[in-house]
Length: 437
Image (cartoon, rainbow, N blue to C red; front, top):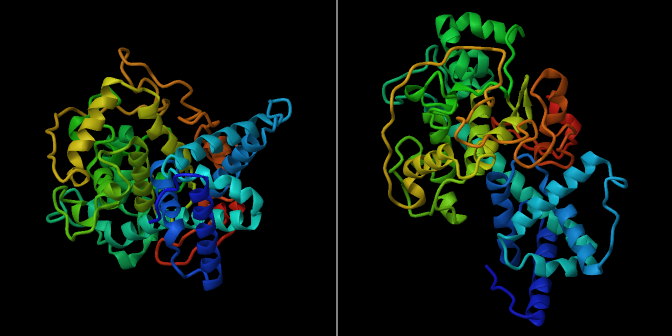
């Protein structure tokens, strides 16, 4: 890793070294792993989908953010009022710039190189392509790793429980989702679980036939610790499910710690610690929730929409549980619990005990985020917008082609470089291809 430039001369040298690194990588072919001066930027890019947003296009974020910095450097007074920009476009630009500002905090030298790229636009394109590819690869690597190693995480007691009927990795993902009772039960909305348990086959058939619609408005059972459920408190037990925690630990503290939180093999620092995470971040928990849903589903390629379930809206809602209620009792207790469940981030820790409660009564007319917090806590505002202020979809079929931003927020998106989760290669296709799988 290169040292941080301390003055103008050092900054210029750092930029020239970065250009040489980029040019060498391009000439050597795509398979060559870039390193040297560009490595800190790639390191930050790999963290982007895990801790900032897995569905935002890093390419768009970088272009919008760097253009905003160019404008400041030129002291341009660009007309960005709602009169000159479509309201939706304006929101998307604001979101990109906000996420760009979060990204540049990860590398102190990021802003120092912006003025250099304005003079060498071709190098800027190579730089953005390298970072975008790194972000896409980071997400797809997690997806593939969970596909290979994470099947047993779905069993509550892996050493005792078995899949019935048998579910093996070679069966492929098409056998999961609503095609298998155990994956279907974890995908089932928590408030519908009693109905599912009364006749799993009938429930699964009704979902596949469209009689029961599963949307992000109905929080899936795998998010919950069932022993904590309380019919009067929607939040009770939410985000404490065993499968969610195992997926999180697989990604951030290593596969060896997924089932047993205190286990860790090898000398390599886990991914979370490599990126400076000492306790679970809300967006990292939301990222794990999205990866968990995808693994349980029968979808064979990463996408924003699985049937009627909008993964973007799902991600935003999990994030909003935290960011829409900062300082709330549930938020603080949940984060303390997660810290105790992820000792791999600090080399120590132990699980907290859980309390028992009954199943909540099923009511298909409501949204699981309605009255999620008790009256003594501030409820998140604008729950249809999500935590970043993007216009959210309601989760119904009419909106599903647009994801949670109202307009497809995936042009140039990491989702466009789709990965066959069973080992296929990624393409660099257009966002329009997302739904044509």
